[in-house]
Image 1 (cartoon, rainbow, N blue to C red):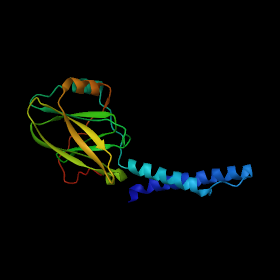
Image 2: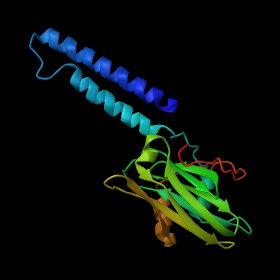
Image 3: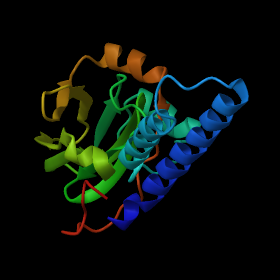
Length: 206
């Protein structure tokens, strides 16, 4: 829970500061306020705390180089490897980083609209997507299993659907290469994380 302390502190600061400003303005005008001085500050403080808590776990992602993006848009694969592309678009939670985990290893984090491309070995794989921070409790993570052959292009679009209790994340397979290239061209490409050994400790909610 300590990871949420900065969000709570910031919310309290916003609440106190706004209440002070409104109280000073009311005193200067000489007219009684139409609502309790502390109410707007409490509301905006709570909104600030909620927004910042959702961003806990969102990290700065390194942009890919122009050469990396060019290779990804050309769908070029390394010898004996396949290419995995995951992209995210839409306005729902666009500022919150979506964690991508491939075969138990953190692969990348995507805001919207962003995409990443990974060179992967042929065979069976499991791609997982989910949020960290407070957003993790509001969105169901998802896993997608797929198999890739040498030279294959495997592309997924991360989609969020609003729900009554929780939002749902989906990974939709995309096979239309021309449409995919056109869509990705306008997006920023995020460089994938450095390759690491699979670990059971890898978590979508980090």
